[in-house]
Length: 206
Image (tube, rainbow, N blue to C red):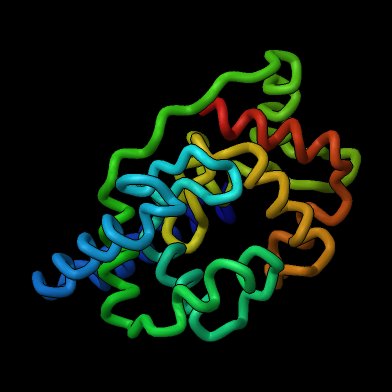
């Protein structure tokens, strides 16, 4: 119980610190980011970040701190999964820290897309894993970091309403160490593809 309380306090402090980090973005950067989002990013990620193509993740409502970290990883070429190399390395290469922060803030302020539908049994299996983990495989519950509603928290991304195909692909590339994410690798490394598909289906339904 003490550990849970400490974790909650730590996340609360972190969220407040992160919030302040995005509070002082110049208005000129906000306008430039909105323009770039509409004229460039929307071609793949959809208007206001609500993409319809599962190849490209939905960005609307995503945690600003997570987007900031990922855009910097694309720019610095430290996130090297195949889709990152193919689509985002070039796109992010010219972004400075100010524009990255402004883009992250812009997308975090957009209304998230509504979740989709899927097979009820698969979704229920995914919900069980997300909320309770897989004790027999020593896999913790996903909600411990991503929150009960999968809305994310600071560096932990929003997963709710995301394309299931995109989520499944990301779990695969992390599992196969094509994308460096040590914490997530430790969690998904022993999941079966069936389990990963179930979790992805549940998250898309939210």
